[in-house]
Amino acid sequence: MPVVNRIADMSDDMTAWRRHLHTIPELGLECHQTAAFVAARLRDFGVDELHEGIAKTGIVAIINGQGPGPTIGLRADMDALPIEEETGLDYASTHPGRMHACGHDGHTAMLLGAAKYLAETRNFSGRVALIFQPAEEFGGGGEVMVQEGIMDSFEIGQVYAIHNAPGKDFGSFNTRPGPIMAAADTFHIHITGKGGHAARPHDAVDPVVAACAIVQALQTIVSRNRNPRDSLVISATQIHTGTTDNVIPETCYINGTVRTFDKAVQALVVRRMEEIIAGQAASFGLEARLEFEFGYPPTVNDAAKAAFAAEVAREVAGEAGVNPEVEPVMGAEDFSYMLEKRPGAYLMLGQGDTAGVHHPKYNFNDEIAPIGASFFARMVERAQPATGA
Ligand SMILES: [Zn+2]
Ligand SMILES: [Zn+2]
Image (cartoon, rainbow, N blue to C red; front, side, top):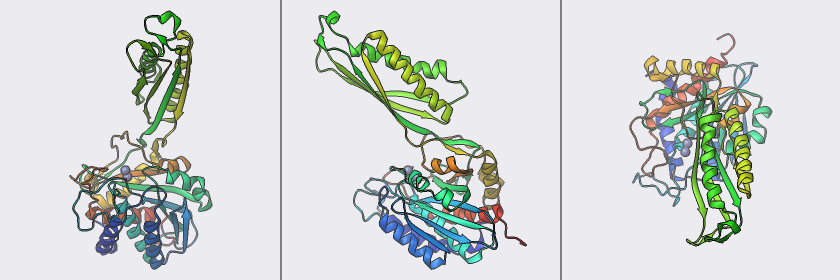
């Protein structure tokens, strides 16, 4: 596998950084020790600018290439999960109840490896912006960094990220044009009728019958309103009401999830849910209110950038090691906020047959770090070639 030679030489460094980070997992925006470690390494490498404290503990480091040119963004996430680690590793978490179970320790080490190489070689034009974000798992650190203006203030023109992928072939790159990860939204429906004796339904307004009708009717958004070519899931997962057999309850609560890959489909769902719930409420003569909670938006790759990323990946992993048309997954990812602002691509890097992410026995495979770092390095050198090179 043609990993960049100089990066192959850094394998031991990347492994050491990753294993150290693995011992100190931090949650959400509170990645203080992690960010301090990352900033110290970046200073050692001699980056040209180091901006700390973005989204509380996020970092953007700038490396200047040769001569003027645009800025390319590379992003790694740094946060961990509230899971008790069960790997038994000698570098296991020293923070009880927290664990790097999604491999963000590896993503950070991989981007540090690329940073070290790029700061040494500078075989590119323009600038590279290395983005280290907290709070990918929850808290939307990527969104906060975007809100704090990193895409504009650093004039980032395009942006790329890699996530490790257990179960996909070791060292393989997987991407696709268009949506690669879903939007994950939550809905809450609050129904208020009129309680009463279950033997005197004519004196009450029953929210239970209305709730059943609403859940059924919502499925018609999937079957009758959505274009059959678009992916859509609407699942009502909780109905809470009532206390006993001879009382018609006053209120009922329905909750569930909506998964989409497309903003227009998402907007259609919100509009139709409102219409259906209002119409059903009117037909039963009671009140029903929808509370729609937007989660991370869909992660949408730019078609041309995804194709270019696949071309760069082929240089590292070979023709057979790249799947440019991987199936999208229904999970969500807050790199989506960066891709909403700038064209770019998200890639999944196979780490072979290991425990899945978010599992207490999961561990990042250190062997893929030089592969991912080589991709990042070559992406910069290919996207912004050094003038005269
Ligand atoms: Zn995760
Ligand atoms: Zn993750």
